[in-house]
Amino acid sequence: MIPPDGSPLASVPAWHSLTLAAAIQKLQTDPDRGLTTQQVIQRQREYGPNELITSSGRSSWQVLLDQFRNVMLLMLIAVAAISATLDLQEGEFPKDALAILLIVGLNGGLGYLQESRAEKALAALKKLASPTVRVERDGLWQEVPASQLVPGDRVLLEAGVQIPADGRLAEAVNLQVREAALTGEATPVTKQADCVLPPDIELGERRNMAFMGTEVIQGRGILLVTATGMNTELGKVAKLLQTVENEPTPLQRRMSQLGNVLVSGSLALVALVVGIGLLQARSMAPFTSLLETSLSMAVAVVPEGLPAVITVTLAIGTQRMVRRHALIRRLPAVETLGSVTTICSDKTGTLT
Figure 1: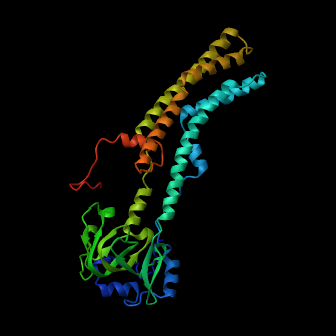
Figure 2: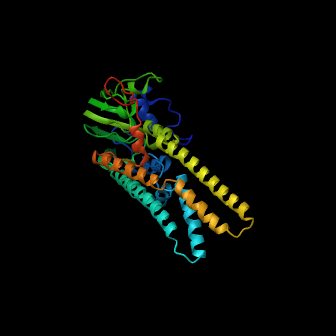
Figure 3: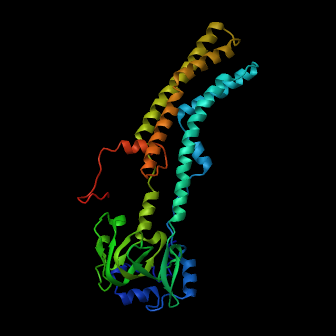
């Protein structure tokens, strides 16, 4: 939630350029007792929960429908429907249609089972990622969920704690923080509470600040929360990530190209066979038999087993990644990882 214009925090240009006394005054908090209960309730209404807003996961129906976006599978489903209609009109059992639908169903079922498991695992991980923090309110230190933090809270930082929000340091005793999540640098940063820095200094040089998602390596300190949720530096990164569009993987592009060629060729073959047959017969009498023949030829052109083989292969790769404790949300991601040719990292090996 974006602070309204009337908020005391809306006009603050850079917290790291303020003295500690000025930051406390801007936050309207007691340096010895923290916020009062009434202030916390008011600010929770004003700023909302201290949570990163992420796009909701796919529902079971969305996961299932995503398995049938392949143009070849759509063509096979259409051929199966037409074949079943013709067989039923003639009073015959639609065995060809059932065989085609069995292959399509096998492909969709394998993909659905694998991706639905990944979605459930991600949902479970999100439920686990709700830590508690020690915060001073009404002069008492208490444990509260990190999602309930508001600007102005005084939070205790100790070794091993993941920092729950952005803030100005009020105290820092041998405090070192690993900020690799934001800066990419694995070397811990030594923090100082009593320094004042230029407004335009880089994020990684703000020694009097601590940021959401980073980790305390050693020492202790007290953090005055200045930003929560999507207003944090990590929240800004989350906003950028959510604007990135998903691009098809190299395998998906090749499959799409192959599918377009095969489907176009099949439809042209159907039209050609039916057209030539009608011209030779000079009547509509053999239309049904011509359509059945052309559909059989169209199905023969399309490799029905190809989507199933690809799905099974990707599922096997996903299971191997799971055994190595890597969670794959979508099957094509396995092939994307295999297409990596260059990895960019700094001299410490940190991926940036």
